[in-house]
Length: 390
Ligand code: SF4
Image 1 (spheres, helix red, strand yellow):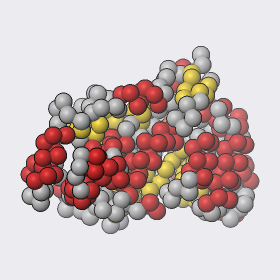
Image 2 (spheres, rainbow, N blue to C red):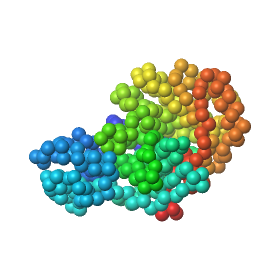
Image 3 (tube, protein in one colour):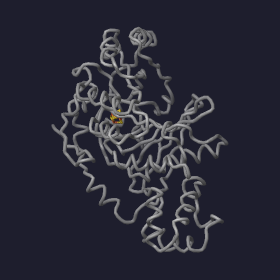
Image 4 (cartoon, helix red, strand yellow):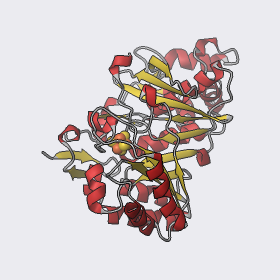
């Protein structure tokens, strides 16, 4: 069975021979645009767009900036209670915001907030306006917190070891639905008396570069200094290897970190784990990475899920090292986190260290990732909007 997917930049269909579970998504950006027509979420708008809305209403853009601060810096829950709003802004809100009006504000319902026994990881399950559910993970490290965001409900890419991939694609998230996850994570940290978020990784449910435009708009909003103010250098976009998206990031000189999931260093080994490799073969992917590096000078992070007996041998580490020659790279080695739908098991510590040693000998820096939040299925590859948690 074949699936037809549409890449949002050019609307061009790509065909994957992915597992049947992922072969049933069919959404183009026309559908997305139609579904997000009016009313719109205020969280979908960049500051420039918000200012244009106010100017179009005959008001000063200063009111837009006041509203922006309330939404994105103060994270006001109730705009009617913000004391410093001037009468014109209050009138604009009364006329434009609410049921049956032009705008609403994304307020995903938190249906679960589960703390891991590691004491540092929390997984949130959110129900979106149309009933879809997504997950966001908050991870504490020494003195800082990182949020792992979802960019789609489900995922089209079908990586065999990933619970999100096993559930298939549902839909793209709008910018406001991505921004709302950051707001919720910030609010959770403030409520617990912590400093704000320091880092973001787009490694939750979904493939960020399959939802390119919405993700870039969300990041423009999130990085705005007058709002959430999370610096672009603290944001990592993770991709399974969507080549047109990587090239677009380079061409547009986007200032974010890029992480590319490899998992295999030959076409055969990789496409057994990552069906999207049949659409964007390894050679094409590595050429795109080289173009990205040449155009941006940025180090690329490569993710490698270590699966016992599948891709964790020293010989495979040698092939990976050969693949990365000439690139400024860092390899993140991630021992497999189990999911119900995949029979593989995690590499032993000893095998992970042996793998890392080969990379080290080739001069390639690497990290063996700490396993986090496994008991609450918040680890890499485990997110799937588990409805049993609602
Ligand atoms: S690993 Fe990422 S890209 Fe692959 S199926 Fe899971 S969410 Fe999608």
